[in-house]
Length: 164
Image (cartoon, rainbow, N blue to C red; front, side, top):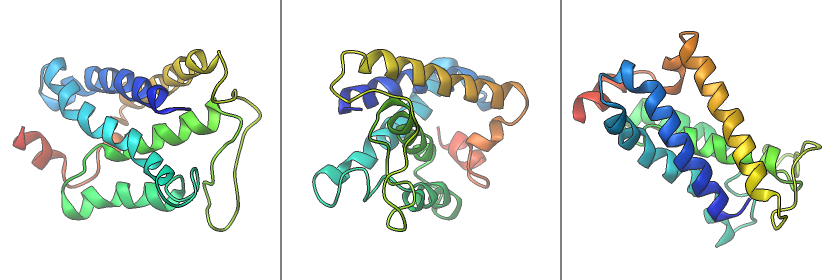
């Protein structure tokens, strides 16, 4: 997907995740949207910096990048929720486009699934919205069935919420 599609995906996800997590954060939905929204949008845009150097959909579109951003808040207590943006970027590229991504780079080349459209397709925006709805459904299921804490890195949740 293109940059605009990733921004749309991230903004809609930020609103949805913020509303779903607000009760557990002891925040108003508006505050929760801001708290989770900024890092999610940053994370959603991060993988595409490889368009400036390296190989697009390889250099930062892989498991190692995601693992670093999941582990970073556990050890350094910042970059909270960025990993959600990165993961949803990957899901959008994997399910939304025909090109797939190099999830296990440099071991293997591109991984793809038999769904999605070309990035420049007239259906790309509709596919972006469908994938976003799917992602929000997964988040809702996690929160609804008591696994919302999986969205938060262990050890930093109290620090994060007390800071804001």
